[in-house]
Length: 160
Ligand SMILES: [Zn+2]
Image 1 (tube, rainbow, N blue to C red):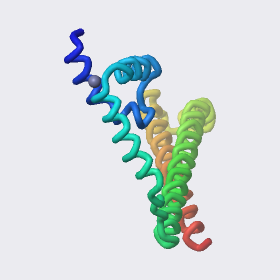
Image 2: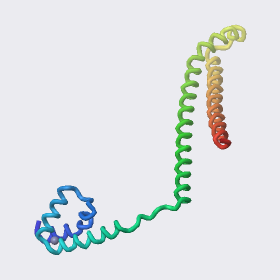
Image 3: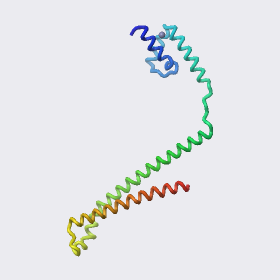
Image 4: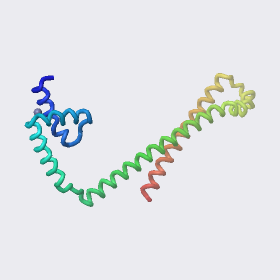
């Protein structure tokens, strides 16, 4: 790389160099260049003056009201996240529960209806339809329970 190109390239990165935002290898390269380049050395001094001046400026402090408002917002968001996570867990459990009922329900259903079956002479296919209705009702009940649970929890939180 020609000296002119390197100078231009390094010139652009001097501010980052002063801010300490460069990788060690690159810092070495810039230090080597500025040791032999008075123009870049002077530029570094200017940047150091600016960055020293910025550091001396008082860091603006947020007002108490802004701080309190932000904290309240963060807390509300956190609570909402917890609520969403809890709803997901409840829904998962209800889904598992519904499946268990559906799967375990079939033999029970057969048992209970076997008496009816002989009385009413319901065929196997029709029994499946009945079971499907029974399962759908279980799912609806599970879903309603989830909705009710989450609504009640939200209501309780409002009262608290
Ligand atoms: Zn230079």
